[in-house]
Length: 441
Image 1 (tube, one colour):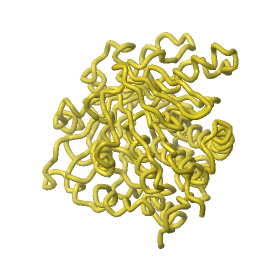
Image 2 (image 1 turned 135 degrees about the horizontal axis):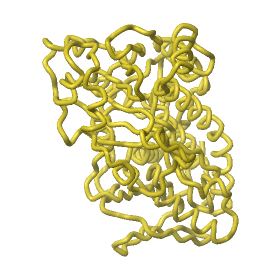
Image 3 (image 1 turned 180 degrees about the vertical axis):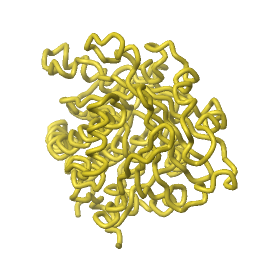
Image 4 (image 1 turned 135 degrees about the vertical axis):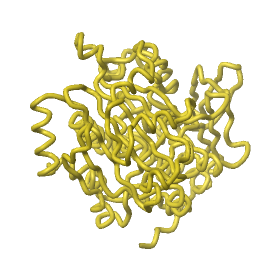
């Protein structure tokens, strides 16, 4: 197999999960790269993460799976309960193992980020680098940062999330040329908000569920209100939780414009006066499925592990231009259910790195060809994942008689779209990295 052209260098913008995984893949493919991260200190947002079975073979090829399994728990199901603890139904997710040889696994997001970061060789990642411009020639591409430093490579991969600076720079230039699709000029869509947290280590004597080798998501639905709560046991005797639902402002005054316009929407504080504490008050009377009150869990959570976020989504049409290409949330922001966002980003990275490995030249035209192939291979699957995640979010969060009827039907007679999402038929063709040995099952 022909190795990539000598001297090929990739500049990755963003040191989140997608950027780190891209770096690890490139490293094992023998391709030079450098990661630029805007933050001066890497601090991943969120508390827990679920990874889809379809990416497990990729993790095995990279030599990461065994360690990731040690820091995670396999997901065996999702139980839906009323606020007072009445069982409403359950979805078994163990069919994943029969189809993909693996189950979905859940873990602490900060733990996963720290682990992936440890796999990046020294000198390959630089923090405090806010990208403000990207310029191209027929031979290379130059990334300019706010501190006036520059980085030169052959390809720029924008792995910098939903508010991607890479995308904004690329789109500005396309708009000036009059060739940016109108749909790509519109902001992210949102109509739900949530507060997420992760407790400090708890006493297994009080919460025996912490000792289980596998875990199950407990979803508590409020009665006559728009708030629900998710609870998920993690390794390290911790419980992750999420309190959320439709934004009350949109419920009270629905003007149809459910969109966010800037990077400040990461926390939601630019739009919502409610604090995380006020949102959590909505579940004060919820019965904890593990005993006591759910407020016991919230009060056992360090303030630094509580964050308020918007559940946003958008499928962009333009994923590349010239020597610049986007991955993950930068080109398809997916509502975060069942790890589809992170898993789809990892699949993007695998697809691109395989194509980089096959490159025979460093010309702009050669990159344009493989970038279009990348979009052709990934866009449809990413859209199905996005649609399925949104449908499940609506199923859980919507209130009222019709929503209750829909939930009862789903929980008793699981529909095809949900089976596709849970069992992974949307990704039935498990990808692999062509430059590494195939995993053994």
